[in-house]
Length: 131
Image 1: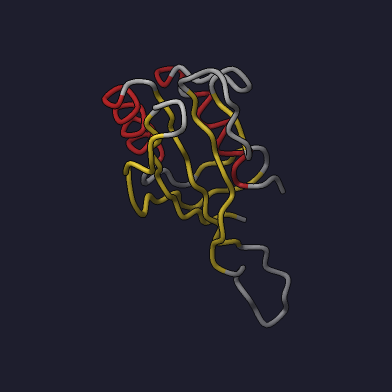
Image 2: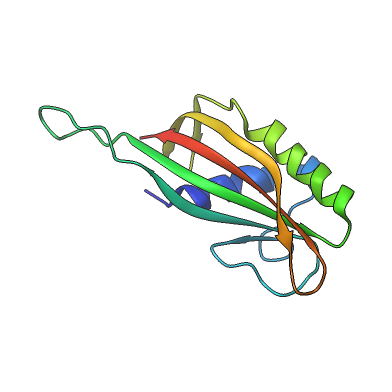
């Protein structure tokens, strides 16, 4: 099973209307200094996995954060909102041999900060249920 960030990355790349290409303007785990306009996905603490009497269940309640950085405030916000609209409520999807029962936005998009190069950074958090 991949980290949830890897699977979500593949979902975002497949959605051509977002214009995201892995290692060009979409990254996982580390936000690069360049280019100026990027999307980065981070695995964040979620809830513990489901515990059953037999301990055979592998049902996870993961969490991810997606950060959108842009030189232009409105452009960054609009991309973050488009990502939210695409992922929120996505259910019953299989990605890289992992079944996703639900992807749910829990907040965002919200302004995180302005980085040292005066680029706006927005974040969105999602809870993910998968097995």
